[in-house]
Image 1: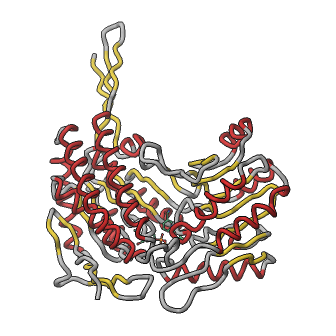
Image 2: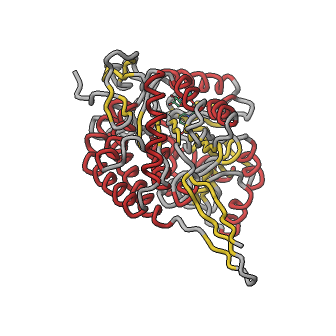
Length: 476
Ligand code: NAD
């Protein structure tokens, strides 16, 4: 038995149960145990949510910025109070270590608080002309927003969908992943408890493609925001285009990590080796393609393998666990396929490579080296606990390899050469570049990609602006 919370839909401020609804089971990837039963929203439920979102939008957009800020700040406080309970449920449904589950809730609270402050700073501008005419540029909330979030960060992904929208004055309907429903549901509940109107923040579940088709077909929804794979992102962008809805797409990546011979090697290893296996590599900004200057390749390789092999893999609820299971069986199968294919293509397996046991979805932290760019793993996002280390001839070749793929979400570089930092900032095709750091996500800076990694920003002032439209008032 488990003390995972009871699941429901949150529509128009009401908790709607499994009674009379299609349901699905939520399981713990560390044990295979069934955690709970999740109701699917019927077509009538989704219509109800759309009608409430329209009503909720008119109510919320007329709530002053001070009041909105105060409600969102209160919700952030509730999340902090509940972080331990919500974080434990996230570990059960997603697998990550407890500190990371709780940390996700704290980050979500910090992001919401940032947005709460930011909504007081939605300024327009006035153009005063000598001949007496004026123009006023105003920012208005775009309207009801539909958000679809992935399972790898059950809380943060959902907060990124709804926090900026609520700050802007939009109403929101969010669909967290059915595989990890509680993290998002708990955020929405905290917002309702803090005083956001029931029509302004709602949470639904169902068959993902059915829910998105239903919501995106409605003229009520004016913006669509999605976190997940590039394939699904392209599909949703096409659906949104039918009605010219605004979109934000936070899609996959395959981040290059450029290790130069002038860097602080021990620091680079201490930061990037655990970083590659955080959340079992199921992170859109996961460092995956290590491009290492030939002169330091062996030193970096040996230090990396030593650190990867020492990581403690286990149930995220257990003390000392550094890496939990993978979140779902299709991810595990995909990683196994990529590793096998990389070896067939001539890559060397330096650590790991195998599933651990047959109960729970555990996989060894895996290191491959000298993998040809023709191998699938050099082209497809692994989204699992596997890193590839390849020796490179120098800066020019490293930048060319970094830019070779259609992805451009995050990139990392370790160097103490200032001129090189500027060249990398100019030439690497990426939404975010971390230099001598693994941190690419902070509440006050925009988070988002280029090319097939998507477009539009979340976090930072840009996350609020992304949910607004511009209106210009001309006065004669
Ligand atoms: P996916 O794109 O199929 O699913 C991601 C999320 O989108 C899930 O929560 C799913 O319920 C939802 N979804 C799927 N189809 C949808 C639809 N038609 N309408 C609305 N929502 C929909 O990806 P996956 O199979 O879970 O993972 C495979 C790949 O996706 C990974 O290898 C990785 O490349 C990518 N991914 C990226 C992120 C990210 O943070 N950008 C997160 C998860 C997965």
